[in-house]
Every structure is written in C-alpha cells, then in structure tokens.
Amino acid sequence: MSAYTQPIYVAMIVFLLLAVIVFIPWLIYTYRKYGYLPLSTTLIAFSFIFYFISALFLVLLPLPESRNTCITQQPGTQHYSLMPFTFISDMFKNSGVVLSQPSTYALLVKQSAFYQAFFNFLLLLPFGVYLRYFFQQRKYWKRALGLTFALTLFYEITQVTGIYGIYNCAYRIFDVDDLMLNTLGGILGFFIAPAILAMFPSKESINAKAERLIALDDVRAMSVLIALLIDIFIINLVGQFSTAFTESNLIVNFLINSIIIFIAFFAIPIVWNGHTIGSKIMRFRYDSKISTIDTNKRLFKRFGAIYLTYFSFFVLSIFAQMNLQIGSPYYKLKVFLALGTNLLEIVLIVALFFHALLVAFGKGKRRFYFDEASDLYTTRK
Image (spheres, rainbow, N blue to C red):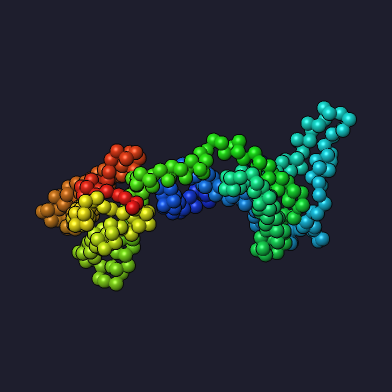
C-alpha cells in the first residue's frame, strides 16, 4: 500500500504549498465574480487541485534513483502491453480460483493484479465527477469521455517516454488495460456525480445569490478587506521600489511612504470616482451618497484614519529603535520604553487583527474603522 500512500503524502505537501500561493488570487477572483465567497465552490476547486496532483503523483512516483534506467533493465525489456483484458488473466493466474466452485471466487480480491486494476479504475472516477460539476448537464458525456481518455493517454505516454526523456528508458509500461479502466472509471464518475454533487449548492443557486447581492448593491466586508490588502501590497511594492533609488533612512522612508499612502487612499479615489486600485479590482467604489464635494471630504477622513494607523506604527518603531550606550543614565529608561513600545505594537496588531475578523465575518453588522470614521459607503454602481 505504500506505493499508493507515499504519492498521496507527497501530493498533500505540494498541495499545501500551492494552496498558500493561490488562496489570495482565488479570493480575489471569487469576490470579483460572485461578490461573496461560496464555500462549496472553494471546496470543490481546492479539492480538484489536490486530486489532480495526487493522481499525477500516483502515476509518476516513486521516481527512479538514476536517470539511466536502461542499465537496471534486461535487454529487450518490453515497455508496452497492447493486449486488452490482460489484467483478467493475471488475476486468475495462481489464484486457486475454480470457476465451478463459487466459494473460491473470493480469492480473486487477494491478487495484486486485482488491486492494480481496481485502483486504475478508481483513479479517474473523481475526474468524471468534477467534469459533471463543470459541464452540469448529462448531454455532455461525450466530451467527458474524450477528456477522460485524453488524460489517461497523457499519463500513459508520460510513463512510456520516461517523462518525456528525463529518463532514458521507461520505468513503467504503456498498458492498454490502464487506458480502458481509467476511462471507464472516469465516465462512470460522470454519470454518478449527481448523487455526490447533491450535497453542494448548485451553480444556479450560487449565481442567483450573486445577482441578488448586485441588485441590493451589497458589498461584503471581505471584499473591502481584500481591496485594502491589495492597496497595502501595492503601496509596499511602490515604497520598496522608490526607496531603492534614495539614501535609505528612517525619515526619508517615512516621507516617501506618506506620499504614496496619500496618493493611494486620497488622490487616486478623488480623480477615479471613488475607486482605489484595490476597490477597482474588487469592483466597488466609495461614495457618500450625498454629493461629490462631501464624498471628497469623507475620502480625506478615510485616508486620515488609515494614515493614523501607519503613523502610530512609525512612532512606535522610532522608540523601539532608540540606541543608547549601556553606561548612559537614560539606558534603563530606554529599556522600559522599548519594552512598553513592543507591547503596544503587539496590542495594536492584535486589535487590528480581531477587528478585521469581527467585521469580515460579522454578516454586515459592523464596518471597518476607517469606513466608520469617514461614514463612507461602498457601492457597485
């Protein structure tokens, strides 16, 4: 069983690393498309990634220790099996099964050939389920059949070519039985998928909820948070790029970052009809619902609330970086000041973190402090 568990274990590690990388882009895509995060689509999408990686690793792993796989094989080794249904005769070989004695049939499930055929059948069965979710309708079964066959053919070609020349000889054979069993499993998964997908909301219900949110002009707090994170990421990126061409010191960096924050959270929304770069990506804007002049005033208040947070961290960092000689009469004061500064910084970070959680998952009962302070509203119009 280690031949099956080890690839899945490796796939799990790769999947976790990949999930960390794609999670934020997935959030951005989902909130742009639906205006909220359907857990069912997230579960299906990420489970598909994990399944696809697992299936690929089950086909390829374990890899040979050397690229020169030819030296480990006998001359004339055959790298393909083109006789269909060979797995059936392999199951009966030395199995002790007597066709006239049904009581011996149970011996078949103890044969390694049975397990190999069974797992080949199961390998692409989930793929068929995913295809049914993507295609929705049963009438597309021919497409599912073609895609399933193409995928299993890709696996077999990858194996017989030694992963396209990475190994000088194939370390697994091209087997026509694998083609048949994989394809059969995939198309069966396509037909039984409704029984499994019934546990998840349909695409129609998800799209209907998204349309309701658009009609109500409801911008979820998570969309606002993601837009803010996009803006902060861009500000940091521009700040790092700008300070790379200047003499780097604390005051210069502070002034440059202050200008960038002013542009990102006030100047750009003023000229871009209430859009920041992040909110434009997330498809909403800020408005006072009164007048343009009032909106501009409130945008400045929003910038002030965000900038105050940055300024607070900057002041704390100055006190934390104060450097005095140990013999200085103010050294003990500096130690206590640094300790208090670090504690305040931790408290501020924790407070902001829990504030973000409460608002993002508060079902619209709260607003972020910068939106509350400015009394700005979010709109998709």
